[in-house]
Amino acid sequence: MMTSDQVRDFYTQNAWLYHRLYIDVLRYGRGMNAFLRQSGTLEPNLKILDAGCGTGNVTRQVLDVARRGGITGLSLHGFDLTPAMLDRFRQWLHREKVEAVDLREANVLEPHHLPESWIGYDRILSSAMLEYLPKDRLAEALAHLRQRLAGDGTLTIFITRRNILMKALIEWWWKANIYTRDELREIFRQAGFDSVTFHRFPWPFWHLNLWGLVVEARNSRR
Ligand SMILES: C[S@@+](CC[C@H](N)C(=O)[O-])C[C@H]1O[C@@H](n2cnc3c(N)ncnc32)[C@H](O)[C@@H]1O
Image (cartoon, rainbow, N blue to C red; front, side):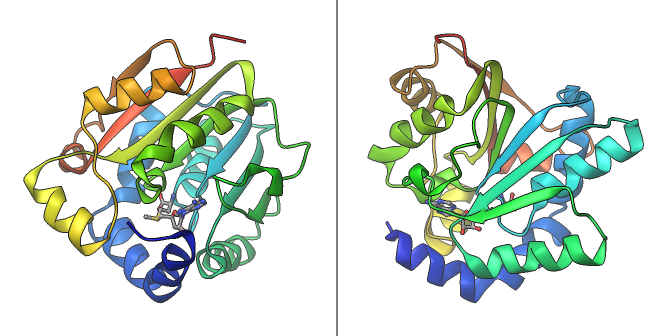
């Protein structure tokens, strides 16, 4: 496993490659967009956190789905460990003249670095970030995120699944952890979530189900 400093260096060097390969070529951005549309998770006036936002994949798609669906009044926050990833996201926000997204540099394992007002989220979305934590600290990170949810808020994570292909592509090449459904069920339980629901990317983005598991947990124990 890489330390946080090594992850930051890795994504400083590979920010362009990540975005080009996964978001553009493998169509993760469009798959995320289709998932958000199909799930109906976006509604007016939600407070949303993109945890480990990187170059902004999730928030960009939230903005697009909201614009097309006439969903207004969203409050959008994002944080990430790597300034180089945040810079790319900021450049995009600037180009698109989007002002409604507040970004911070922060480590999910050191949540006290986030503003005190960053609580009470209706939705927390986290894509392809939590696999960079040591496995024995994933429950701790999920518990931190849970504390930032509103009473009826939901946390949805997109995380690499364990299979032979991902062992080569993600564990070895991109130096991240991979998970089974059972492992995630148990880790969410340790983080204080009563139950989780697994979802899938819709057609024509089924190939993304080979990469990842989509796990939704509701903040039911507050
Ligand atoms: C594979 S990229 C995913 C970015 C984005 N969420 C997406 O869906 O494209 C992984 C991101 O996780 C961030 N990351 C890794 N460990 C982190 C941590 N402990 N706290 C916050 N961000 C972290 C990295 O800086 C990187 O931007």
